[in-house]
Length: 401
Image (cartoon, rainbow, N blue to C red; front, side, top):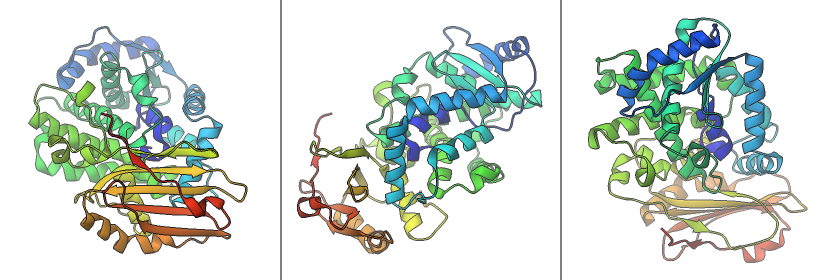
C-alpha cells in the first residue's frame, strides 16, 4: 500500500515486495542465487555493490512475525488510530474496516521475498517453486543495492509528509521494477517498446486482482499498493531517457506524487506548496494526501472504481488535520490549486458529494478560501456542536526550501 498508510506501509511495501514466489531451498542455495544475480543487477541498475548483501531463508510464519513487528514499529497504536480515522472521515475507508488487520492480511498474502534495511539482509520465503524466486530476488537485490547508496531507514521513516514519502517510494520501486525486468530479459529492451506499458499495466492489475484479500480491499488501498510499481516504473523509464546513466537520488529525488505522475512537472521544477497549521491542542493526526490520493478521492466521490492519472488536476499542495473531540473526530482539509480553473473544476465535480455526510450529529462545509492569494478549497467535517466551527484554523504557506 502506498499513500494511504503513509510511512508505515510505504516501509512495508519496500521491505516486503510482492511476487508469485513460494520458495524452497536453504541458505546456501539462496546465497548462490544472490551471487549469480549480482553482476546482472549491477548492470541493470547502473550501480555497483560495495559489498555482497547477506541472505537467509525464512518460513512464512517468521515472515508474518517480521511484518507484525515492522507494522507496529512504524504505525504504533495512536498513529494507526489517527490514520484510520482520517481516511474514514474522507470516506476512503468504511467505519467497519480494521486497517491493521487488513494490512497484515494483505502483506501475508503477497510477500514472497524481501530486503530488510535494518539488518541489510535479503530474505527468501520458504514454500515452493525455486524458479520463481529469481524474479522476486532480482527485484529485492536492487533494494539491497539502493540501501548501500541511500539512507533507506530515514527516507522510509519520514512521517510528516505522506506525499513526499510516496514519491521516494515510487523511485525506489520503479527503479527495482525496471532493473529486474532487464535482469530477467537481458538485451531485449523490453521496456523500450511502447506496447509493453499497456501490457504491463494490465498484467499487474490482473495479478493483484486474482489475490482474494487485495480484490476486496477498498480502492484507496488497491491503488496505493499498485502506484509505485506502475507509475514509479513509468517515471523511472522517463528518467532513463531524459537523464541516462544517472539516478534521481539525493537532492534530485522527486518530492510529490504529482512529479511522479507528470514528469514534465518535475522537469520544470514545479514544487508543491507546503501548508502549515497553527499549533493547537487536541490534534490526533495530520498529513498530506497529494495528487494521487486526491485522484482516488475524486473517483470514490464519483462512485467510480477507476482512477484517472493522465491529465493533471492542477493540484498545488494540501494538508489535513484530524482533531479528537468529545463528540467524535473532526477533519479540516485545505487544498491549494495551481489556478482558479482547477479549483472551479474540483468544486463543480466533487464538492457536492464531498459536502454530503451520512454521519449522525455531524455537519460538513466545502468552501473556497484563498490561502495567501492562492486559490484554495477548505473542507470541514465535524460534530455539529464543535466549538471550533466558530473560528476554524487557517493554514499558512511555508516558504522554507
